[in-house]
Image 1 (cartoon, rainbow over the protein chains, first blue to last red):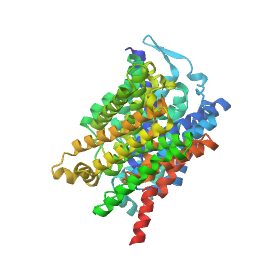
Image 2 (cartoon, chains in turn cyan, green; image 1 turned 60 degrees about the horizontal axis):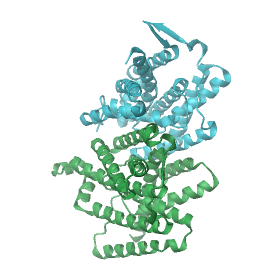
Image 3 (cartoon, helix red, strand yellow; image 1 turned 135 degrees about the vertical axis):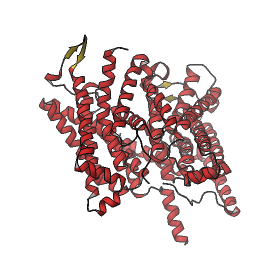
Image 4 (tube, each protein chain N blue to C red; image 1 turned 180 degrees about the vertical axis):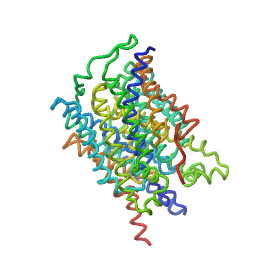
Length: 285
Length: 321
């Protein structure tokens, strides 16, 4: 194990955080387990790839990925989930159906080949610090991950929307009674969470490649992160991402064929002691 | 999702009597199928029986313990992998391989159970989903043993069962026995305790029941049945790849049990027939089966979450009132 691999783990964790934070936001605040989150990631990646490759601008790809995936999220929430509101299990299974449809349509639209999003000129190559030569792009991903964390933290704890979201989680009836349109608050959260999946897709697409089962892999990582960190907790998502990112990277180095299995161990141990995850709290009743 | 008052387990003896006659007639009628069906149709019928067992094993948890599992496809597939690997690569006799497959699946189910019984509701679903995906990931990556994406191929079905008709009868006998065993399981005092846990964990705990132990045993037994289905599938298919342990396998099994009606147990046969028949019709016209599967899921969740059989029963109940 060396510093290079450690950095690999941390930068991978940053990517996971971007995706999983969207997942945990929607799960924690809206009580919706969006199993289409992986599919949204993949769509974001594919759309970002197409736009970035066609126009030559990485940033444009990012805008396209986040905007279009947020639009899919809007359609999903307003078009389908509205019919099953309040039924937790039906919501989950419905999003599972959506995931199947989206994945299959992605296969129709982009085929089964794997793509890599082109990295902009400025982020190519590497930098040398303390004797380690490290790719710039991965450090950029780390930076984005940190920015997303800080941004979400400020949003939830220091803005009116964040206050409304927190209040909506604790006591939705009281909030509605005070004249707040709760649906709009929740919709905003759903769009934000979806957009993060899209952004993650573009960023991940540049160093993990995009292929038909990439969505399932990222979904499992997100699930593991939320199970470890506890739902709805930003800090939990960050800690869970670091856990999963590092373990996965070490696992790939030590047991290349069983890397997937390595995240299973800590998840198992953790669940034995804290079924709700590290930062999970009991449902308000 | 939980249906409480289903027609299953009728209390009065007359209905129970009628139910067993009906079941006997159904099995006898099914046994005549090889005389009427082509080989292709017969292989569909075999698939329906195998998947009905898988769907029933899912229903034991979903309908009677109130825990929806998305990991049963993986448990099923572990049995398939082990049977084929043991027979082809380890040179073990197919019958022993069959038993080993079931044993392995039951062991995996027990491991899943230890972790999953601490959770309920959506968390249970997520955890079983994640566990199933881990199995899938291992099957995909552990190329030396599982053959990776290419999977494992081998002529594992014993020569005596080579003809379609014979194999159909064996599978039918298995399905009938397993269905009966599962019926007895959910109707037993143990099964009633599971239902008590489904309705109120707290209450059962205060009554002095060991909730965790009951859920553990319930999950493991359910996994055992899924494993038998998976081992039969190995004999049927003679091939296994990561698709067999993938999420879509669990999802199809769950869809079958939902279509048949969660908590009806035998509805699984109707559900399996509907889904497999649909899959075959759809694949004649298009390769987009996953899209159809997804749309079917969305539509059922919105319009008939209690399943088609459950919906019919509800209609019947309304009429008889």
